[in-house]
Length: 336
Image 1 (cartoon, rainbow, N blue to C red):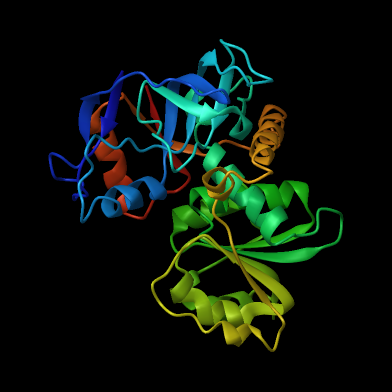
Image 2 (cartoon, rainbow, N blue to C red):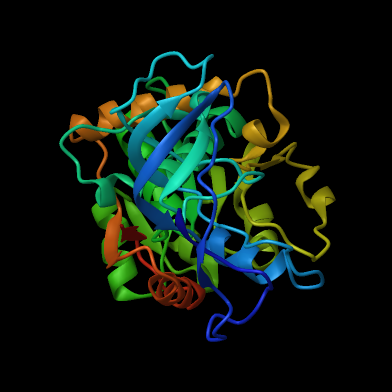
């Protein structure tokens, strides 16, 4: 099969940073779907892994990235239930397995779901990873109220993919007052389009939030820079509030700053369930099924703001270059 991979961690402008390769077709295990990939989303995680995982030791064979996909099921393993060849599916994949920058990919059926009807493959591809991350962050990690009890939610990194879908989910499925951060006019407008009640500038976070009328906020989600905003988050979090982040940091954080408020810091990694084979892996398939219905009912909007075409190294080099600039609004997708 045709794929795009790499052997060494190199700057994206290096000719070998990503390469066109031919690889054997993958063989599904008993619990796998074999999927013909039609479209993928390119995430910051893709660029981070390309830069880091082969910095000291090159891979012996091409490593294939890609953690979002929409495609057609071509074969099912013997233990698969709920899917048949010909079904259109979507998923965010498994960080420990070969990715979706390829014509064919195997994925465990428990972390996949039927893709939403009436939505193009490229539009649907903008949602799986960020939807799972946002859903798990809100309802599993932070345990925000899912009833009518009002609360305040600060979304740091509001215009990115995860921030955008977090805002939509919180606005449409809870009684949250959503405060999102953005520093440019176009990103501020996007956050409002996603449903943010208030948009503030992250560069002066405490003053901006308090000028907007909020002394404290009940929940904070951090999708930008954990260390940069740590002191501001500790200042703004409400007593007994919760902070959630997806952004690792080499810096030491003074977690004791949360002690007086009995506040909590929660980590979210969407790959945890598949990486460790947790007993509740199938929960991700359930979340994606719920998201598909929300998209079909026009409650949740897709995030595709930039579409590139072609399963080629040049296409993905362009995509990674755009991601590494750190200014993307919404999601960048590649249609095969």
